[in-house]
Length: 544
Image (cartoon, rainbow, N blue to C red):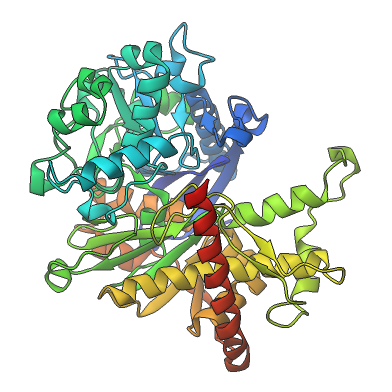
């Protein structure tokens, strides 16, 4: 372990299953300590109903896991107290939660501690498909400003307003008790800085622009008339829920003595404005204009930045939005992604292990599946798959879609089906790249970050072969947390701007996967199969 010495910053990365805490040297980005802590209630499956696509997380999970992760990281330093200058926070999203007037998460209040609707509605929760459809239908009437024009022209059930409306329609008790609704990315900094008034929670432009339809063109959020037309219950919200937003290189507030004591660090240090994990991960990977950075985890989230003067009036249809300053100040941040990526492989593993209790399982099946699947040719034994096990995020959000596995026969094996799933997520990646480029935004480079990018050579290689492009994978296992730390370094005054901090602190590339021309040629025909099967799945969804 390196000596601490220089000033450090702390990056907190709230993922779907756990929170990661990374202590990073501000001078050069060295990660000198890290720890991961799982959400205890979430890991027990509490408050979730996968059959209904309901996925909720209790805010107490965040508090407990965050404390354990920070203390775990500090313990790696052998008791030496690091000179931490600031904290950065990234989270999943859109993951909103209701808060009381005093900014306390509603699920921490008496009477709401076991109500799933009072908890954080995780990004992957798709209980609000109808609400998203209603938003899109209202926007199509032309009666109001085109509020969805900057989010790809299609509103998703994974996002802020659809989730709030779903609770408003089903659970008026929770809805009336909520003084405000806050993205997890904004809630954690507010928690750490002791905000005690829901109206004073600092909102990051990242979550506000990509999920809540905030934009300077219409002066902030959609107006009350639009919300009331969507559903009268929304007219009862305290409006506006918020007006101003900040980029993540700015300070949200100072760390309170209470949280400093829980963590074991100094009080009063700056906490940066929060953002989504993918956006900060892109910065942790050293994103440059027209580089697509892919966070390859349970889902994927893809980030590209471009100068506003070059983007001009270009609007990319069917993505998760384009927002000034969402990834880096001074650039338009574009977001896309896939609703299931690693989740597809986890589902297949669980399917194969059905009926076996946990004590009889000998580790994960995935390494063995990958080892055997990597020996098969493109297309395996003729199996084909769609990657829409959790619906489709982009291009063209549609959470009604379902995955399909086709071409099965008596010679199909678990490894050949696994390979078909791998190829399906690579084809989903290709569809995203093609959408960007067909609408005038070039993709010049592709960078992979996250656990799957580093741990699965097969997946990265298949993506390179399908795309016929190099895939660069960064060295850090914690690119998102490192990105959060980079923003903390700017918010705490260690650097004048994010460009300088990124240049000094981003993770270097560890490996480059180059495409195999022969494999790519074979994938051309298989990709055509993927598109045909996808068209059939869309017909099924329309008829359902």
